[in-house]
Length: 271
Image (tube, rainbow, N blue to C red; front, side, top):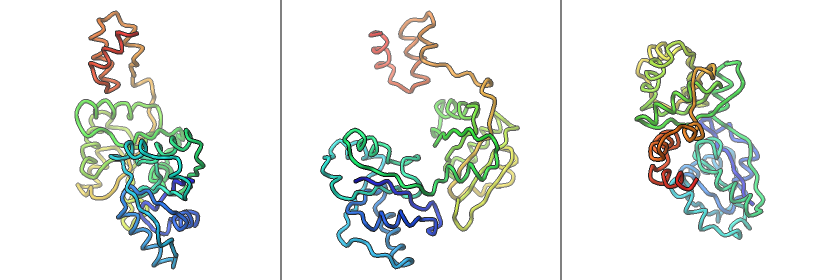
């Protein structure tokens, strides 16, 4: 049996009774960071006088080893009670977890996903934006043309769009939005459910002035809905319909897919 268990994104009191029960009954705990999970269990023991199995195994499973870990798995691994937890929030939302679910589906393994804390949904509801068609964009690329293209796609998606951003790049993001869409309404949620939780609303320049370089903490950015027709997205099929040499088509396709140019060119030759 596999269970994906969400953990608090800040306030430990947000953990559910079902989550505590699943953690208590787990034989194996797959953890994004074993140190964080052990600390959580220690707090639960002390604060809620909760007992856990003495022989629980803690195994590290994060974005860097997820693929290799699953490739080596045997179905019998799930004969025991296996729980996956990320450091905070819902597994599978900008954290590992989805590949485990896929493995369970493909191999007929019973699994369950417990509901729980999510910075994504908390910030979206807190934003007050009434357009409820939601698009989760995750983290933008750190720099370069990839970041520019990704941000433009997020800005002109036609949906209320939610981003995660690090405190080191939030100022950069606001300056980028101010340049592209100076009048766009944004909502920022800082340190959700923690002691210094703060909400900010306004245009990018207004937010830069209000935050005043105090960017420490964890941030969620909600971008108000745009009209989709303001952004023209070119697909691979659009490029293939152009009367261009295959090498040129391959280079253009790689700009939108991040595919290796050589492998893309070889793929086009086989079409």
